[in-house]
Amino acid sequence: AQSVTQLDSHVSVSEGTPVLLRCNYSSSYSPSLFWYVQHPNKGLQLLLKYTSAATLVKGINGFEAEFKKSETSFHLTKPSAHMSDAAEYFCVVSEFSGGGNKLTFGTGTQLKVEL
Amino acid sequence: ETGVTQTPRHLVMGMTNKKSLKCEQHLGHNAMYWYKQSAKKPLELMFVYSLEERVENNSVPSRFSPECPNSSHLFLHLHTLQPEDSALYLCASSRTGGTKNIQYFGAGTRLSVL
Image (cartoon, rainbow over all chains, first blue to last red; front, side, top):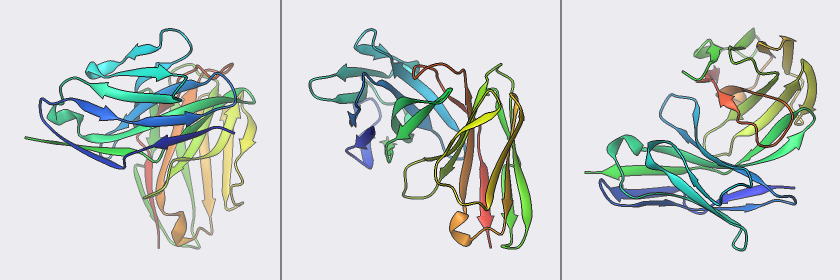
């Protein structure tokens, strides 16, 4: 069975400083991993995905994540936070389920960006 | 816009009511999903449909009844719900055929059961 652990439920940063949101995964197979973001009263939007190509993955809005198999980690980073980055972030692992794919979500990290 | 539309956006219902949630996707996908998002809990997968057939039912109570009449539409029929069923219900769609396929989410229906 697969699982995801997001190590911080809340992260607070100042605008212009780096962002680090931590994620560890467990999967029996070579995993596909995703980060999604959810702004208030909105659905989930894909930030980036890892699917066994390059281990450093670049996403939208300046975010990137590095897949580290030895550490079973997939941490999300951004060099400089913006006020608009304040949202909830979910780390997700995917496995095959019939014809679709089954996503297992972490519990989420609420990012707060302060002036 | 993600190409996945959910209606209604908000729903308040009593425990004896019957209502339905609707999801429509315009992305040409052939797999669709229902998720439940409750406060303080991870998103829970409820149902998976692939090529209009249900391929996963994640131990969901029978008071939730999904329907997928074609690859573009997905419904969740609700009856005799409980207050603990109050949550945000999210629909998603993807292509079939592998774990790399991205799921695209709708904005959700916020359900309150009184």
